[in-house]
Length: 481
Image 1 (cartoon, one colour):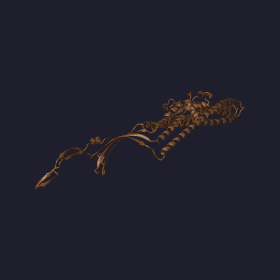
Image 2 (cartoon, helix red, strand yellow):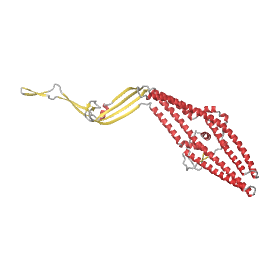
Image 3 (cartoon, helix red, strand yellow):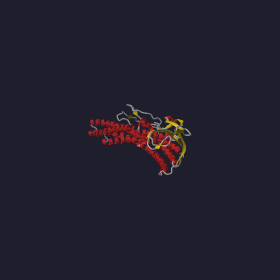
Image 4 (cartoon, helix red, strand yellow):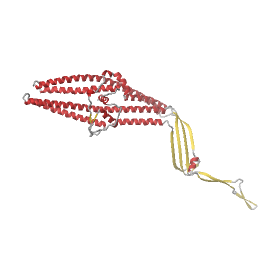
């Protein structure tokens, strides 16, 4: 069924234009309209689209990582006890309120191209997720096409069942006339009534199966079960197919390797895995960086010199012959006047700058860096094996599709002859039955054989067209109705 669905996808629509499609009453949907609507509403597609957005963010972040780091910080608090004054750096025991400001920056000068390789990895991952989105669209289209195919075949089965009922009714009416004329016994009419009841039940079953198929399509399309919905039946006889000789499997395989999203995803994953090895290896080497900072601080108890003066005061007295004399120093004393320093003055006066070079050398990391490097090499091998497996599977699928197309063509041609001969047999049987030369049982058997041959012809015709369209899809050619 997956192959049939893919044929039908290729047959009825292309992915070049995706538009929002809304259900409307009385409008039949073709497969392209169904797929276009699903591309906008299906959850799997929307989840894949989110993955591309995540990958875009990873790429953007890795590019921004090349820019310098810049950090601005500030804090305010109260300190008490024996501590260092943040402005004079002397030991004090007086509590004070402080306020600090800091501007810090750093930039890697050389890191063994780790960041640049990370950008390359994330860019490849983004491209891989974009191709993965296309693959998700293909997968969703396959699911829709499976349901569409089931509904289409169910509708065709209704047509066959209805034709069978009408044919049985005609035979019953003819038999009743002959019974009334005394040419045939009543048992013949009763047999046809039994067949008509059985055929009518078959018609009801076909109609029920068609309704269930439409409900299944609504579920895949995320349509409300109560919304009006019906599908168009394409004219399978008018669908053009290429000559089977132009769809040789080797040539189709080479084209498919360049066209299908899964193969592009595999190639991008291998390229990303190779770059990831360089990223992991670069993290094991020293990193050189340039750093710098600006800062200042405030202390509410900080003071500053406001004024100074010289005074010459006596330092004692002496008594000479009973007379007291004041004693003055030889040099006058300096007297200083202090006051609290303003906030802005402290910020300006305590302003400091730092610049320097740094190196980070990973010596012991618990083996995490080396393990990460070894793991990246194993992941490369895993990606290469996955690519090889997908290519092998694709080639097998193409060869199987080619062989199936040959078998389907042979089956279709054989079923056309079967219908032709069964129709002639039924025509002869009907004439003999009208002349009373054939039993009801034999006529019913011939009729069942014809109906079964028509059903097999219908299935083989779709099978042939679908398998041819699959090869055309792998070939990458434009498909037209």
